[in-house]
Length: 305
Image 1 (cartoon, rainbow, N blue to C red):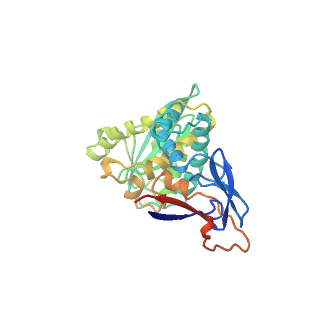
Image 2 (cartoon, rainbow, N blue to C red):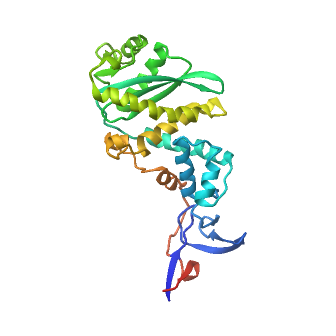
Image 3 (cartoon, rainbow, N blue to C red):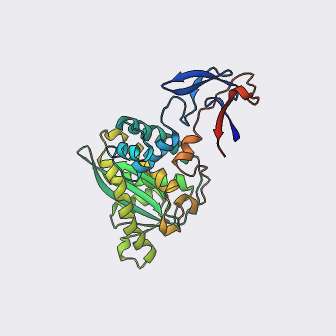
């Protein structure tokens, strides 16, 4: 017989100075003597009952194009837990904001040729446009802006946002031939940036092939946007999907790497699970003494040899 001791730490402050605090629905509860919080050792974030692995599974399924209506069934089949659609919707908003804030802190190294693309999408019965600026070399999506149209200023704002993210201006921008791009590029970057009109006429295998692939990629995003019940969340979902595409979605064309890895990004999270697990709030407690827990504060598991 082999006895394995697993030390229990407070999920709020990380202290090992915890004690048993009864049971609820057959589940052991704990109380931290340093921060005085009560918690359950279920691998969930403070104030949440669903383990982080299952939340990450739901987020990955959502940004891969699964509808919120179908995700609860997927969760039940994979994890054995039932979650509501409203819970998934809250997770998407909460962790999209977190991911966006973390992604905004990162730096990327992109090339000098960018692709500007726009596509129409209908959200809650209204027509919108999403303007994308993508680096051709790394496939990194620099920005994705939702707008009511595709006028010169709409294109200008998207290009300016891309320049801020890249911390540079490109040498060339490949477009679909719309004249608004010429003025938008000049307003955003000046007259030195070359606009390649209608990339379909360019003898560039890499650009034409990527445009075809990008059409399939953005189709997933458009399906997510069409299912939205609130149009005011559209830009948040777009930005959340942008993080998923750039930082978590490994692509075959990039030899199994993410666009952020090719662009040498310093983003410190590998996937949604990593992001969620490292998002626990930091609690500062005066005089906190993190000494190893005693034997009475350990969870004893008996493993039969």
